[in-house]
Image (cartoon, rainbow, N blue to C red; front, side, top):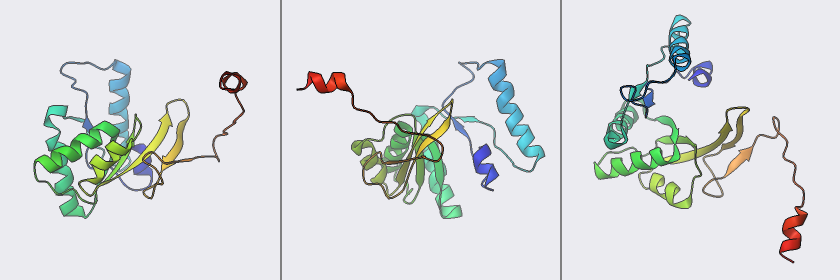
Length: 172
């Protein structure tokens, strides 16, 4: 949310797959989320509070995307790859038009099968490779050459390749 707000795109919704009625995040995490929300509001970014939506009710998100597409002419949702697939499957099952929606996906590989499920509704997926300790390592594009095509951020990271002798010897 902070990155999006920095470029003037405050999120409209924050869907969460964590049901705080059954799982209580640590005090540190609860305070951290509240701090971000309230400080954002103090500085003019109207951050939404997390809204739990179970995987069984994923249609709620597909309906929200369809409505957002109608109201704003587009919708961008950052989520896990499998969640994007389930949202798109739900849209098809419920006759919802989410064509043109953009998904920023992470957390798992984008396979050809998963990409096809997302594209079946006219949406597109852009994979990102991120890890907590360093942030974004690779960012996908909406014109990929493969299902999980990601551009390596070489201005921030180094990729050092070397031959693995033990593998080469094993296969000779």
